[in-house]
Length: 395
Image 1 (tube, rainbow, N blue to C red):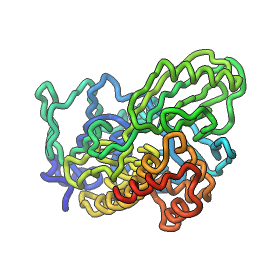
Image 2: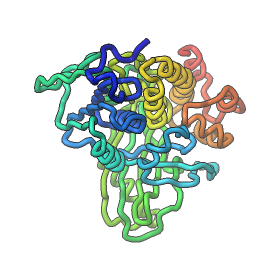
Image 3: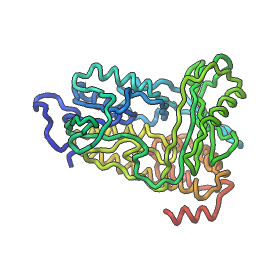
Image 4: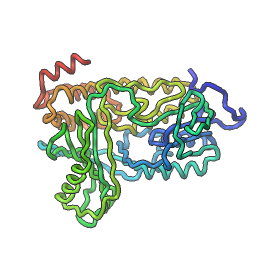
């Protein structure tokens, strides 16, 4: 099966982008930025058109991952995207705290935009077109709302989570504040989950990233049945928690907000043909954690390695689908077998597992032994026989 449907307009003697001719990327978010950078690393003369409806490709996001999520052969072009890194991270629950060794990384939308812009400036056949809302996406062309048609050998459409096809069980939702500090001591390491905060609206935890001596990201996160967010109330609560922690806030540098659907069954993954759906739109994310970076990176790598043949891409998508089935089973367990006030017990047990099991779960790379470790053993308090029956009957 070929990923491109028509010959490129480039003469056969000129370089081609990893087996493709012209690649048109719809949406300039994380997924398509990674694809563009991967293609340009493979072929600096790659013919790429990146389309963005907004005046800028920059968003207001922070993406995180474990260093173990990153394949060794992409570090050359991926590493410049990293804006912060730490050798370990902490988790906190009412019953215990734990430090988990292993490098943890953060990317910001501002850093991604800066690296992509610099790379495009040195790529003779690649360009970003902003203020370019799209009217129609086809296998071999994209038509803008102003009537402009751009022909393509491969189209990748990555325009956001609202277009993902899935059965929604609940939501991971959050409000985050990046704070500039004028006093107090910011923590040295991130806290991925601080579930010692009051539990409400489902499972709730505080996520903290120390981005510098005087910068910190405070994020209030919920696993909830509803997508509702009272941003004003949550913002006030975050500032109060920062003050209790002894941090003196000089100003709020930026705010971020997210409402990510959590599926009960694996999302419908993109098909390995043009137009290819990328990111959340293509179902390429972790169903339980909401992390999209590792899977977005996996798609980018598969496209570069496939050389126009869909075999590598099909293999990658099949692997992601297998991993997602287990993650969705855990979602059903979390939402159906436990009352909202008891969901934190599931995560308390999970973070007692071996570090490798935790890291592989985040990366969607769980082994059979990992899955056995996650689901076996004494159930946490709050376990509901009725809920388990619902999980099993829906499986």
